Image 1 (cartoon, rainbow, N blue to C red):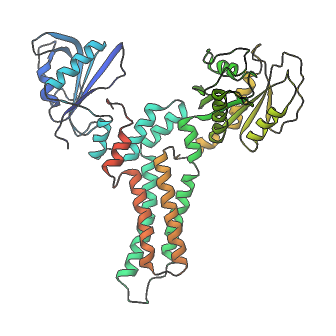
Image 2: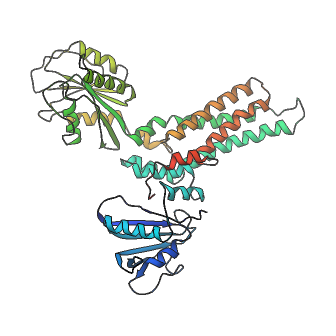
Amino acid sequence: MEERTIAAISTPSGTGGISIVRMSGSKSFDIISRVFVPINGRGLDKDKDNRKMRYGVIKDSKGETIDEVMVCFMKGPFTYTREDICEINCHGSFVSVKKILNLLLDQGCDMAEAGEFTKRAFLNGRIDLSQAEAVLDIINSTNELSQKEGINQLQGSVREKISSIRQDLLEALSRLEYSINFTEDGEDLSPDEIISFMEKAKATIDKLLNTSNKGKILRDGINTTIIGKPNVGKSSLLNKLLNENRAIVTDVPGTTRDLITDYISFGDFTLKINDTAGIRETDDLVEKIGVDKSIELIDESDLIIAIFDTSRAFDREDEKILDLIKGRNAIIILNKADLEDKFSYDFDQVTIRTSMAKDEGIDKLEEAITEMFNTKDIKRESVLITNTRHERLLNEASNKLSDSLIDIKRGIPLDACEVDLRGAYDDLGFIIGESVSDEIMDKVFKEFCVGK
């Protein structure tokens, strides 16, 4: 275990009813005993007060009271980090919190690094690396489904699945190595049993990889891009969905020149909505850059909402927009239904008539999106791959297994097939942190806030 005792503020900055300052490490009890004065006069007892809340005050080195607090000391190893932990619940004043933290640092604590509490939980064996990453997913969850999947992974769903696959690969490896090391030349074991375990493992890996698109949508939201010609109602739609004036709306074409992105909760999902510059031919350099960005964003989107103005006749620029969304998840909005209809075109995609001016048709858009991204399939999955690092390692393991299987079936000597098989086993181990470099750990935990 780490010799350093760390401290950090574990609640968001700003004012509030309560804030928490947390310590973890072997000096936690000694430090809190020096700065905390219980109201009833009975000093803290490491055993009797374990996991109990004590009321009192925090005093600085001059004996002046900083704040009234509730203190909870927890003995390791049955704690979040498996070390001694102390949490100080104080008033949510920025001044109080900062003074308490500085006092702990003066008393011998080190300032915690980003994610260091969770990093210690991993290094001390309380959670694996996939569970540590799930903590961050829970913190960043923006809808009920993503929060539930984060809890599922924190409880070990990914670890159990990966461990099961690795067990199949271990069975294959043990038989392969037995054949290499303990049989005479020309008397290798039949590869059929080895192949059976490898194919079972690969099938499970590929099934997990098939959930990654659903997992991405669950974690990051449905990447939704609103496109159309200038002044058709794109920014008005964004404002209606957000229930606020997020985008500037005028009658002047080309007002939106840069990408505007925002998030809204949408049933079981989160929508990541991009309002783009109007797509049209233009000589304005700045507007042209915005148009190019809009076109690039279409390729990255899970859903495209294409808006057309029915008060104007269908033209070549409208045709260009239809070409851009061909073969993609798209919903067509025929806007300005309150004006005379001069638009004529039969669309293959889901089509909805709206009037932003009269607040008509938005509810039908919400229904269409909900139907298009049905959550029933997602809810049926026992494990979803929501993490890009996991997806990459699963892909590498699958490719190595494919290569190894091809070699074995072609009759390549078994010792030559072992490298890719063992590589796949190791790749899966990286997911749960069976073997992990400092570089990978730093990359994982730098995304955490300091107090977690």
